[in-house]
Every structure is written in structure tokens, then in C-alpha cells.
Length: 427
Image (tube, rainbow, N blue to C red; front, side, top):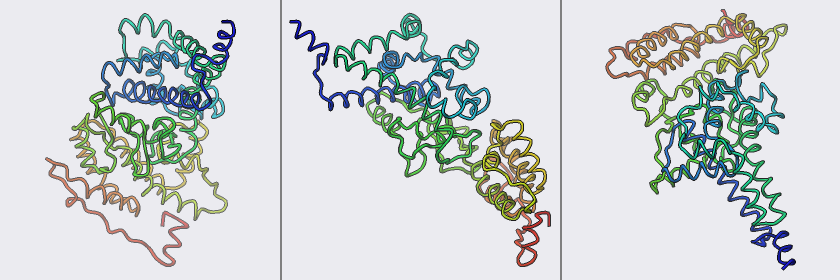
């Protein structure tokens, strides 16, 4: 009998081999990932999908068992992250605390933020508040991982503690570290959002689609994170499967392809079915207007003129609210020395304000004025963008349209005149 007890203590009830252990780890850790991305993130934080009550409670239980996360606290911290992304008030920005610290100590940063009572009161509304939440999941959140440790040892013996340790590190490293850290530090961007979010990789498989972080920051209320043909969001795939089974109801998804002003106005009224693609328009403005002019300024600048760092150039895309005071001062000085770029930045600020307006009638009238002014700016790239905007502004009920907008002819100088204009943009 003693031998049996020793055998059970050493190998657990399952006597599992390496393949079984790896399969168990894969299933349980991915289930934890799905709990975070589907329930805590997309459902509770952003309200983009609702789940059947039984499934929602399973997610709550699994979160308690494997992470000790309290739903209200997680939601509040993440909502504040979106409200103040990459600024000094962001609970976890690599530009504030450093990428190395966020990658390896992301869980500690989350713990510090969740103890802020004012943060919970402001951002933690609308989360579960039933009996089991008040008496078990919240006050005894650490009971879950403790129970999981006993289960792991019972199933796998002494080695179960190593398995349990991997489970405990999974979310702090991959979600808090990689997604919140690398997802604001390295990768590619589809949209010029007002922060430094990036898509880490186009295939969102390992972290349930959270790898597509820039897409999510562009459309935080969308249940689907992938927006381009070569991108894949495993979380969205699971949501679709659950929806077919009657276990999930999608509330909002982003329609990115339709990015003109007509759709911008119509989509606002159509919520919660779709989301207004404001960032799509601002991204096009950066790529078609700001970037060409900046490249020209950099290419033909005088050798005695200081260059602009890549970091400061990125700030031209989104307003650079994440810049330090000194960086803001240097960027403003660089822009002020270039009237064409100063004009473009002024039009960008006006366009961003219009795109965030919630009054459709006001937006339609003001946008027509913006298009006319941009068309008369004398800057080729800005005139071309205004022309395309005007062509898309067939707003129902409005007497104004693209035909009413008169654009000065876009003259592109050649020969010596072109050289003089490149050297001196004021010519």
C-alpha cells in the first residue's frame, strides 16, 4: 500500500506520459486564453458579443480557477488602458514603464492598477455582481489557483507543480507581457490610431487573436480583430462557431472596407451592427497627404537643417499625444519651420475633430467646408485627398455634393520650377 501511495505521489492518478502532459497543457492554457479574449475582453470590456448565461458563467469559473482574475478589476484596468493608451495614465505602456519591465512584470503592473478604488468606480461598471461574485470569486479570488494546484498534483504527481507553474505564468507573460508590451512596441500597423499599438503577427492563433492589437485599438468595439485578407483571428473563429450553436450573439463588428464619409455618417446611425471607420479615414490622410509631404521635406532639406527622428514622424500620424514635453516642443518647432506641413497638420486636426463629432448634420455641413478649404490649399496631396473625399460625400438629405465643390487645378511644376519648389516649398 505504501508503494501505491508513493507511486501516486510521484506520477499522479493519470500516470501520464509526456504527450498527455503537453496535450493537457495546450488545452488548459488555450482555454484560459479564450476565457480572457472572448469573455473578459470582447464581451465584458467592450460589449461586442454576448454569451449564453451558462457559457458566460463557465468562463467566470475558469478565470477564477486559472488566473485569480476578478472580472470587474480586469475590465476596469483595460478600459483605462484604452482611454489613456501610451500616456502617463496608461496602467501598462512600454513607453512609460519600459518594454522589459512590462514583458516580465506585466502581472505586477496589473495588480498595482486593480487596487485603485477610483479606477474601479469609473471604469468597472456593468460587470457581474451576483451572490457568487460577491461571496466567492471576488473576496476569495486566490482560492481558484490554490484548488488548481491540488488538482494538478493529484493528476500528475509531484510534476504537477511544474505544470501548475506554467499555467500560472501563461496569462501574465502572453497577455500582460506580449500583447500589452510587444503589441505597443514592435509589429505592423494597419491604422494610424492615437497610440502606438501594433499587430504583432497577422495570424492571431497563439493568443486567440489578441496579436492583432492595432486592429483592436482602431475598432475596440468590434468582436472581430482581423480586417485584412491575410489576417486570421482565432477568437473570431470560435465566436462564429459558438454563434451557430446558439451560445453567442455578436453585437458589433468593424466594416473597414467602406471608409468614405457617406458610410461614416450612415454607420453611426446603424450601430450596434457596424462601427464607424474613423481611423480608416485618418490613416488614409496620413498615407496620402502627410507622409508624401514629410518625405519631400526630408529629402530636400538643407544639410544644416536638423532631421526629424522616426519616432517624431510617427507622431505626425496620430497627433502624438504620447510624446514627452521636450519631444512635443521639438516637433512643433520642426513643423513651424515648414508652412506646408503646418497647413497639413492644421487640416488633420480639423478632420480628426469632425470625424469624432456625434452630430451627423453638423459633420456633413462642416465636412463640405473642410473639403472646399482643403481643395483651395494649393498643396497637391491635400487637394487630391479633398477631391476624393468630396466624391464620396453624397449625403442623403444634403443639398451639397461633390458637384458643388470647385477645386483649383492641381498644377505640378516641372523642370527648374520643380527643383525650386522642392528646395523651397513656399515657391
